[in-house]
Every structure is written in structure tokens, then in C-alpha cells.
Amino acid sequence: MKKQKTMVAQVKEYVSYKRNLGFQLRIEAGQLLNFAKYADKSGHAGPVTTELILRWARLPDKASPLYQARRVEVVRCFAKYQAIFFSKTEIPPSRILGPAHCRTEPYIYSEQQILALLKACTQLTPVDGLRPRTYTTMFGLIACTGLRISEALKLSRDDVDLANGVVLIAETKFHKSRLVPLDPSASKAINKYAKFRDKYHPISKSKMFFLSESGLSLPYSTVKHNFKLLRENLGWCTKGKRPPRIQDMRHSFACRRLFLWYKQGVDINHAIYSLSTYLGHVKVTDTYWYLTGIPELFAVAGNKFEKYALKKGNTLAM
Image 1 (cartoon, helix red, strand yellow):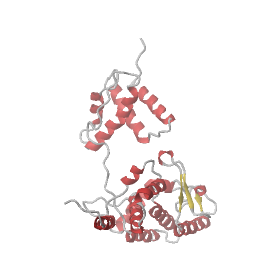
Image 2 (cartoon, rainbow, N blue to C red):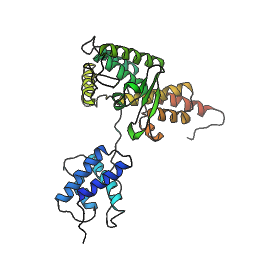
Image 3 (cartoon, rainbow, N blue to C red):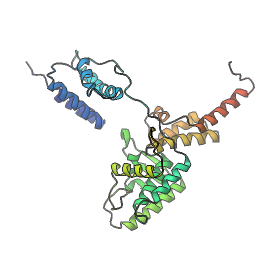
Image 4 (cartoon, one colour):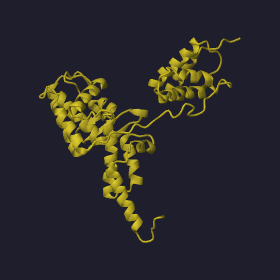
């Protein structure tokens, strides 16, 4: 009789299969391997069961419900795959431990706050060095294009067309690539930065567009740390409230673009697809995830509805 493979072996086969299809599974692969080791160590034999998944998902005991639900979701995908080969595999019902995703309310920056952040970047030390210019230009680019911070950090020199003011975002999230045209003011800023960078480091140590003071690529952990310092210096940390994040500039860009379109009378139903493409989203619903009901948007939308309601033939149901 053929000996059954360990759960670890089965998970490794599944991860390999998914990656061959183009899925990265950076976090999921580690979680699945953790589940498989738990299953093997506990002496589990046979197909995956709902009881086994829930027992593992609830570890540790003090973990948040959202964390536990996310663990179920990851293993549930594996169980679906296993069910193809093992008919007795159990697939837990969807949301058995509640929702696995919860939208964190983003912080929407005002234009004045963006300007304050960029000004604070210019004061980073050494003030006459590359560091302040790198952060000013990088955060400015993110604010005016809605780039993900990971996309900005991964930009190579070849990805930035300085002559035409176009940025290539290559093989980013979901393996999508896109071209991001820049406003003339943004194009001017990155050209100015590139000239200073090349003069500051005439012999480049890195192919990346944004460099550290020493001429190397910028790790996300370093950028996150420096942003935290800037945020604290600006007094943006209020006790009891979640402080602004770098990625909130992407949310702010989407909301600001929608607000401007409303003011200009643009057909939002069509324009939203342009915004979705510009931001690099797979589905337009991903773009709606980034939109937040800020007062400015509510005011414009309210005025438009009021004008519609007052037109001849349109009445409001009371």
C-alpha cells in the first residue's frame, strides 16, 4: 500500500503548482507550511479537515478574530485544491470565523499637509546632501501619481523616461506593468533630482532611480523609519488615533482626482476606469476600495444631486 505523503510535502507541491501559475504567495506560503508542520506534528493522518484547520487557525489563543479568519482563508484555498485529489477533504464554509479582510480607514492628506511633509523632507540631514532631495522627490512623486511605495523604491534608472516625463512601473503587484505619464511640474522635479544625484554620485553603485546618501538602494524599513520621524516632527501623531501612513498618500491621490473630476463635470462612470488603469488595479472595484467619503466629495456630490432633483420632472420621494 502506497504511503501517504506528509502534509508538508503536500503543501510544498501546492505552493510549487501555484507559483508556476504566476502566484507569488510570499506570506501565504509561510502560513501554509506552518499549518502543515502543525498537522504532521500533531499526528494528523488523512485528508484535511475543518476541525484541523480551525484548531490551527485559533493559535495563538489571544490572536485577533481577523488574524484567525485570515489563517482559515489561506488554508481553505489549499483545501479546495486537495479536494480534487482526495474526495474526503473538508472545505470550511466561507467566513466560518468571520471576515478575513477589514478595510482600515485611510488618512486623507490635505494639500497643505503634503506641502508640509515635502518641506520637512528638505530639512533632513545633511541638508546639502542627497538624502533630503531623495525623500522630497520620492514622496512628491507618490503624492502626485498615487504610486505604491514599493513601486517607487523599485524604480530603476531605465524605468524613468526623463525626456518624455513617463515612468514605467514594471512587473508590479499582480504581475502588471503600466506607463505613468507625469505632470510637467513632476517631470521637472525628477529631472532636477536625477541631475543632482548623478553629480553627487558620478560613479553609480546602484541601478535604482532613488538612492540613499551613500549611493545605495533604499530599503523600505529605512524609508518607513524616516517617515515616522518626519511624522512625529510635524505633530501628526495623536494619542488614540492611527497616525498617517505613506500608503495613505495613494488613497489621498485617488480621492483628490475624483474631487477634481466632479468639479470639472467629468463623467465619473467612465473616468473611474482611467483612474483604475493609472493606479495599476486589476479591477475597478479595487479602485473604489481607495475612495473615501471626505467632506469635499460629499459637498460636490450633494450639490450635483440637488441640481438633479430640482430639474423639471424630477421629484424626491418623501
